[in-house]
Length: 152
Image (cartoon, rainbow, N blue to C red; front, side, top):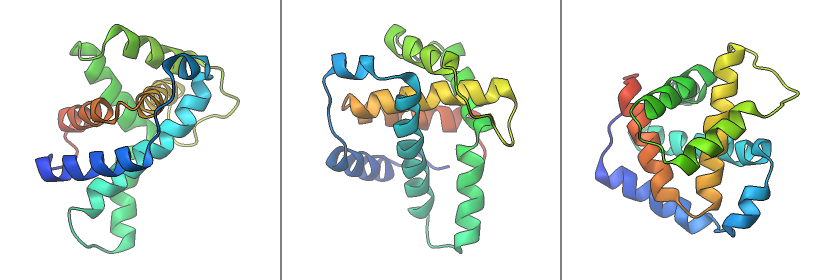
């Protein structure tokens, strides 16, 4: 997926316009599954925006590409890269691990338990960054992760 500056700025502008900043203390009191819930939606919106801005295509093709990028296995690979590369701050790592360790009563349909848990942690981090008004950092992590796993 091409990481052009124009695309990055477009998505960042859209997220900033629609996002909201919450007080950090309030966000820290949210359950990790609540953070993952909003993070899942925001991450999917980012991926869909990236794919659509690559050009017009049949919806089925768009869906297949986005599904590959939002699945638990892909998110887990991104997390492993970000952690192994030492890119995450201590606070980001803490939020990620809180999400990974959260007791979810749902299970993955097409993913291993390990991938599903790491993906939940990734989504919790995305939700935390979004609600904190740190969309720029969220986009940096997404772009670095996507570039590292290179699914193109």
